[in-house]
Length: 196
Image (tube, rainbow, N blue to C red):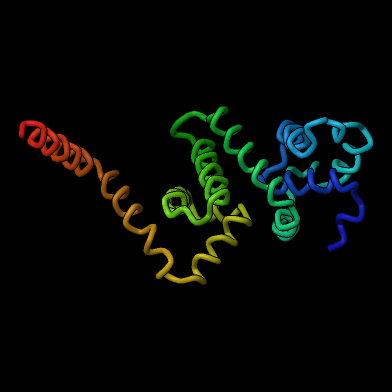
């Protein structure tokens, strides 16, 4: 895919940075430009036109195969900065609790945090839980999450064993009265230990 031949190198990295998030939004695109080029020289008209001439920016989405390829072209240090920015931006601008937008945001935050540290079993468990709480069709809208699920499935159940106890424990605690009962038992046990 010779797409990079049509862009200045910094604009190509900007495009790759935009591919990390599943949706293209103008404000986010500008902020990602600032991350790619802190001098903001990339935000001049000629460079902006290189980027926005792609119909993807009018459609609000990069097609799946292109998105996967673009993320792979992102320089590792730049990928880290982009993902850290996305997590920070979503945490600062939370959607209302109990809404679909909040669930989608939680899923994206979990995904970005996982991709920052894919060896962290806790982050994987959190992401698996967030994915389980969303309808599969919604999770599969994000090609990178769909690809990640397929990779996990290929690797088999043995690798998932590290994250399973945490997911099961959280499911147990979310069971309503069980969580209250376990918490009461833990408080009582702590009280008994304190009396010794």
